[in-house]
Amino acid sequence: MTVINATRIALHALGRNKLRSALTALGIIIGVGSLIALLAIGHGARAEVEKQVASLGENVIQVSAGSISKSAVKMGLGSSGALTVEDADALKEEIPDAIAVSPEVRTKAQVVSGNRNWATEIYGNSPDYFSIRQWDPSAGEVFTDQDVRGAAKVAVIGQEAAEQLFGEDEDPIGEIIRIRNVPFTVVGVLVAKGTSASGSDQDDGIIIPYTTALRHLIGKQTGLRRIYVQAASLEALPVVEKKILDLLRQRHRLEAGSDEDFKVRSQIEIAEYATATARTMTLLLSLIASVSLVVGGIGIMNIMLVSVTERTREIGIRMAIGAHRRDILRQFLMEAVTLSALGGLIGIVLGTATAQLLTALAQWPTLISPDAVLLAFVFSAVVGIFFGYYPARKASRLDPIDALRYE
Image (tube, rainbow, N blue to C red; front, side, top):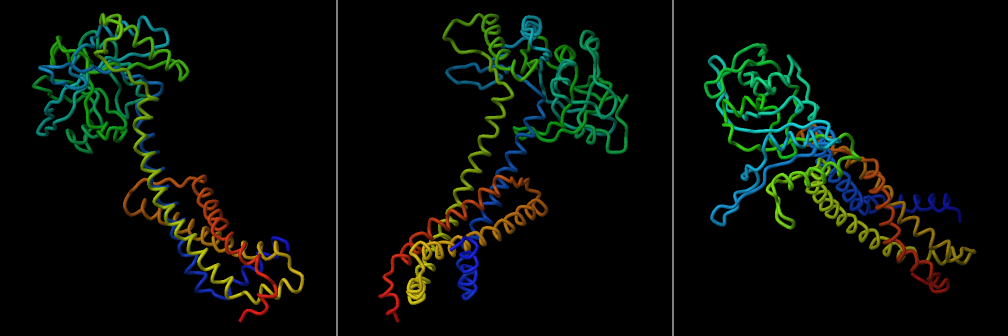
């Protein structure tokens, strides 16, 4: 018996009990549909996180201020104040593969523009910051090295801050804003980047020269919050990270074996940390959906056992006219696989439609991967083989004489 003949006979047998076949396949349909939809949600969430990490720029290393302890209480990252502008200068001068370095300070302040005001984050950076983050202005331009050297009172603002301070119709370029009563001229507005991997709004901020921030807003004695470093290539990333660690330990006079008063994290580490939750969620959702498939497989086994009992006399007749045991095994196994595969195909369509509906109605990011579709279909076929084998084997081992006598 060829596979084509076995498939044709299987479809004919399933068609004789359409309602029972449909109800049996329902478990596979729900299982595969759930698997496709839940994997799409998981992959969509992961892709969104990866997109947010990519918004940091290319080959970026972040050196953050470490933690200090006061009365045995650890104050958390950023509290040490150990990073200095001199550290940033040393990184730029002594590490050849560090092609861009930007020291950063940060404060929050109420910003006033005319009769509008808005509380937002104020970042002090160097011009390298914009190239490291691959963040271009949508209007105007960014400040220059000369502005940094002269501690110029100029500002580049994010899209959200621009809308809150100037509205949607007014052009902010050349306008004056006041930060803690210090006037700044807006020289540029950045393109929108959306939320970061940590969930903060990257567009709600104002960037000024770090020298200006230290002189007029924060105070020169304040340590840096962070230093951004861009490596020359992806291959150079681990080398630059190691050199940063060694150089800063040397500059901070840290003894061997002692903890660093700073934290070095490459973009690869940030991406792995940020996507870990999405991967875990995808795995859990897949396991939940797999339970439905297993339940559907048990339903197939149950119905196939009933079918073997109902068709015992038919099996005896087939054997009496020359059918081999392997033909009977193949026939019933093909029925189980056909039922499971058809349920899988319908489930794929249902799961894809559900994922698209979630995106359209709930604005939930989903991503339907071809690998996920193939995995779901193969899984459904394997379920059919696994749970259909025992009933098929039972049918093939029936004694022809006993089968013909069965009433």
